[in-house]
Image (cartoon, rainbow, N blue to C red; front, side, top):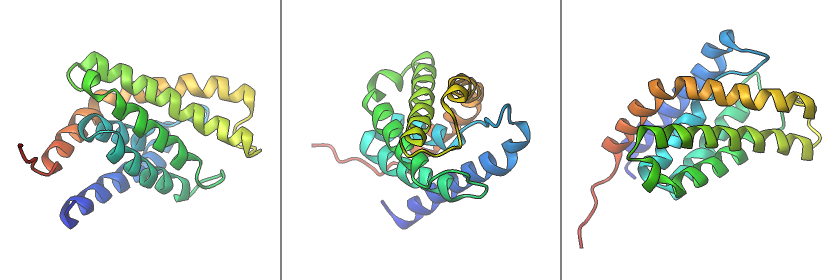
Length: 170
């Protein structure tokens, strides 16, 4: 990956995290905001595959973990988005061609990511999300992410396709 491609991806992830933390915090329901970083990672998984998306998921998750006003143990979103990037990348042949399959992939990825985040908090005894609240937060997060999917996923996938390096034919 060239420096220009890496810089553009860094800007996209930074913009997603800033909008998620600062912009959409005004629209939160019970503390839940749309996870734009997750949507960027899913777009990367559908375009570039599991390896690329897992690395991007780690970097995006780390940015979400370290962005103020983070009130949880650092690394939880990084872990969740690595898992999301890998799982979404494994189904990219099926999900990349159909909008319905892409929506199902986003719903599953949002469920997995939010669940991993909540479960890692329980394992680490982080008091940010108790068990009873996690059961209400997860459906809200999935719904919010699905609501923004038509606005975030297609432009992100188009940008990632343009940033893809040329492939050599054998």
